[in-house]
Image 1 (cartoon, rainbow, N blue to C red):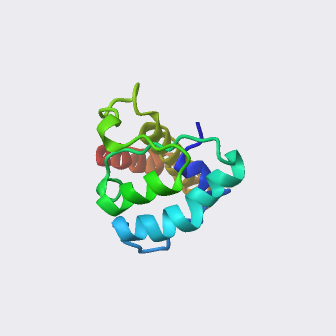
Image 2: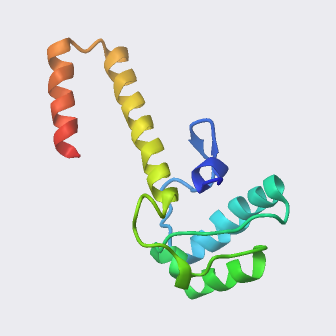
Length: 132
């Protein structure tokens, strides 16, 4: 399985979503799918991949579903999308796991670069934990 995050990052820099972009159905189709994800998937797998997504509003849009049925070799339509379960829908959980690891790395680098004392670092950690 290749997830969207893998296809749309270059190191740590996201190259699929413009800063400040609102990801609605049109943006998802015109930019994320048409310009980035589908060409990348075709480059990686040719015509040998099955496309599946979750039920985010941009993914459920009628025009998005039509585009994917038309422009992918095989598309698992919404009637067959799995429920929200880490066992059945690993894409979301994989993505958020990667994002959480990146957040932790940035947090640790910030502490190290600012020379934050152990006591201040502990307060920051407690505050960060309370936010989650």
